Length: 207
Image (cartoon, rainbow, N blue to C red; front, side):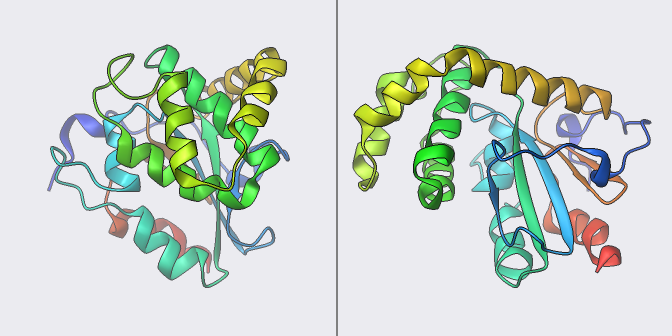
């Protein structure tokens, strides 16, 4: 089946995941030295990202992320590195700032928070859930994180975090990724909200 508007044109850039810089500011799940790396560029407000991460009621693709985590990340085969591609408005940028603060201060909570953010996502862009107040309210419901400390970190690092996002986006466009979600593993670009099979066919040959 076709994934329609979610995929767009196949990028022509030659890619190699080994050429993509990964720093300690880039959140990841899995073993640091896992044999395969998958890099994901996403926007917390993007419905197609939600479809891949947790499933979306209006997008028929079955979410690939839970299966990737179960079969590849938890078994030590794949590390997934998350890069920012906030392009849908201010809410996208605020979410990416809180992501960096949580990764810095509460790294063990990062992925649970990420899932909660995608589950809470409603309308695209700066409507409904996703401004600072609603993100802080969500963090409070999770427990184990000091929202005042997180807010202070974001306030102190707005410029630095904004620079990280710009760097991530510039990297993505160099690699032919012009929208979200976009993934690279090995020498393969996976554009759009695709199912688990497309990830497997890019990952398995590397194992």
